[in-house]
Structures are given as C-alpha cells and as structure tokens.
Image 1 (cartoon, rainbow, N blue to C red):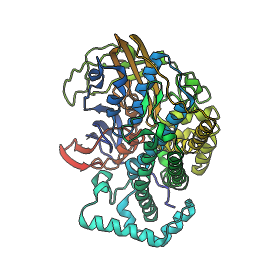
Image 2 (tube, rainbow, N blue to C red; image 1 turned 120 degrees about the vertical axis):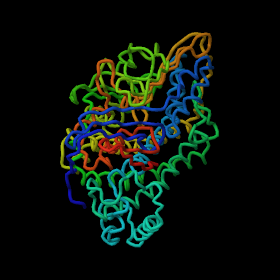
Image 3 (cartoon, rainbow, N blue to C red; image 1 turned 90 degrees about the vertical axis):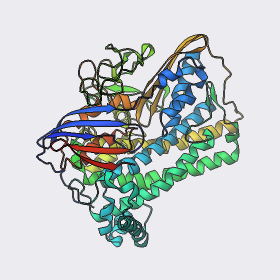
Length: 559
C-alpha cells in the first residue's frame, strides 16, 4: 500500500485556462485565478452551442426521444427515458409492470457502464501514473492484488501488462495514457509502483468489461448506444422476453456484478486510501438534490427505490421533499438573450454570443437553481439522501467505505467523497438489479406478458420526465400545442453542476468546488482535472493550458 501523502502546493499566482477539458465529449473550458498556489476564483465555460430545444419545436412529441438521445453519445438511454417520461406525464399514463421492470434493468446497466467507465477510464488516471508501473515488482504487485481482490492476478500476468506499457512508452505511442494525464514524475501523483501496476492491469480489464455491460443493455434496448425500445406507454422488446435473451442478460449482469465487487470497489478503496487528503478538497456546494430513481410507478417519484430529496447546508439529518416547481434556469451570465430566470416550461433558448474570454457572459450552459440555491446533483447527492434515510442498500456500504478510510461522513463533502459515492451507488445498483430481474421473470412466468399501453398524443398538454441519470438530475419538459411540440427544455446534470454564475452572482457547484484547490505545477494542473472529473462532466477531447505569465501554450490530448 502506498504511503499517504499530502498534495503539494506551488507559490504560483496567475491565471490558468484548461480548454477544452474532460475525456468524453462536448466542450468545457475552465478558467481559474491562482494566488500563492491555491485557486481563488473559477469560471466554468461551456463552449459548444447545439440548440436541441430549437430543433424540436414543431415536431411530433413521439419523435423527441430520437433527437434527445443525440445529446450525448454515452448515456443516450437516459435521454430517451426522460423524453418518454415527459410525454407519458403529459398523457397521464400508467405503465404495465413489465415495462417498468425492463426500463429499470436497462437503466441499472447504464449506471454500471457509466460508473465503471468513469472510474477507470475518465478519472482514475488523474491519480494513477501508468508509466510508474514500469518500476513495479510484479511479484509484490500480485501480492497486493491478492490482498484487495478475490480475483487473483499472477506475477506473470502483471509482467505482461508491464511489457505492453513498455512497448507503448518506447514507441512514443502512449495513446490514451499520453500527456493529458501528466504522467512521469508529477509531484501530485504519489501511488507506489506496485499500486500503479495493479491499477493499470485493472484499467485494461475494465476496457473489456464495459463492452459486455453495453451488450447487456442491448438485449432489451435493441442496440447501444441510442436504444430503440422505449415508447410512450411502455417498451417494445417482445423478443427479449424469451428464455434465451433473459439468460443472456443474466449472464452478462452476473459478470458485471462480480467485476464491481471484486475490482471496482477494492480499487476505489486502494486509491482513496492513498489520497485521503482529497477528502478535504473540492467540497463546493453545500446543497444537494436528487430525483431518486428506479420507480415502481413511473410517474410517482415517491415510489422510486432510491428516494428523491433535497439537503440544504449539508444538514444530512434533515431531508426535504423535492418540489419541481422550485426549479428555474438563469441566463444572466450565459450566451443567451434575456436577464430573467424562468421555469423550464416557460424556458427560452435564444442564443446571443458575445466573446470567448468574456467574464460577464461566458458559457453556453444555463444555470439551473433550486429555490434560488446552487445545488449539486449526481451520485454524491443520491448517496447522501439514501444514507441519511438509512437506505438498506446504501448505508452499510457507506459505513464500510468510511471505516476503511478511517473517517466520518464529513469526508463525503469533497472530491474524494464524490468519487467514492459513485462507487457506492454502483455497488448498490449492481446488487439490486438482480432483484428486478427475478421479479420480471416471476411476472412473466405468471402469464403477464403485457409491456405497452396504447395511447394517443394529446392536442394540448404539458409534462415533465425526471431521470436521475448516472451523472445526476436530468429532466425534460415538454409543452404540446395542436399535437406538436411548442416548447421543449432539457435541464441536464452538467448544467446543474457545471453551469455559470446565476443572476445573484452565485458560482456553480464546480466553480465553488475549485476554490481553495492547491496547484503544484501550473503547467500540469492535474488538481483541476481531479475535481472537475469527479463530477463526471460529459464534455471534452483536447486540453490547452496557458501560462498567464508568459502566454506560452501547453497542448496535450485528452481521450
């Protein structure tokens, strides 16, 4: 096990710009002002305008899901589900039990795919130096692996991983491990070589495993990404109700559960145990909101397995009910016309770009607020609400993680806590997914084969679909007039967490989380990436860091 160390801090003062940031898709620019090695101000700038709300106007409401799935190439199903739930809410529909079971199964695997990919391929390498694995003793690394996981790795296997990494290093083709991860001697990376080797081996295993998780989603969803099985009133996957597809799904699910239990959680604890100081960095917002997820009745949030709730001022002993009427979107500091905050049903999407680098209007993202307050949404919010409520699937896992780290619940309000919460949520969902599968099988065995209700698009109506996506609270708001979409607004997790300031000047969750973050090397600001990536932003591809003293640019890829 690596020695616990403290993140170093430079004496640098000046601006740092990371643009664009993250490792999935979209464009996010982070601008920070550093004073004596710590961030004193931050701006989160979404730099890509898409305008899906404008595209949807005038279209058949049943088509919305096919457009909104293209919002993201990763969590496409969550957008399909949100659009479908919005239309069902407008119609006042009640769904067949089988439809809800199947939707929950696909969403459960979406959670597991997203969380596994995030931890290993989008975030863990902010802490793991792959090149340092070349210095490891494979025998000691095998012993370390045996101490944390029930799935052994031989010294020979780990030596093979070293050989693969050595080949990449020697050829100069590190691919996904290249400069974006600031590898090779960065002072803020301090895992020992054996831990780096074990983590690298598991990174490669996760690449193989995520394919199978995606395959499980496609058993019911027909394809992945961009599933093709949800319709207003239920689902259409009759062929997946046969014995063979159900057995295929179950086999893929069991393999995924094993990976989460034997790799993901042990790796999370291993890395977190060495970076305990990050339990005091990146706290950010003091308010948290979750819609809850995995319903019994699709339109009643209180029937969800994970319950909705709101926490204010980090008072986890007081869980407030979630009230949709308290949501509004601000555009005062966004590249849109207007100054007024609006409820989503009355929302407008009228672009008005000023200039890049504008400190007044500086983002294509809107700034959602709950009752005028900045709230964080995502796994941390959900885990906090479930923990406070004593949720049987969550509280023991949280207690286990906190005990392993030797800390109390206060550590959850941090970059490390945010990352840990995602793993906790993954484990809880992984274990519960098997229950939904058995309930579906029992219902089918009882002769109930109904999976969809017939319905008609209303002439005039409005509705909202709430999905607690793997990244947080997602809602689609639809207004129907003359049987067509008159208004459609997407309020997504990345705007809740990564939007700009609001009309009152309040920073977003990520902007606030960056305040006080230490920076060891302004040319390689991995600390910024750690905190921003802990929110799992769905934006990115390449990064450019500017030294404010010299205006010298440092370019590196993020995949």
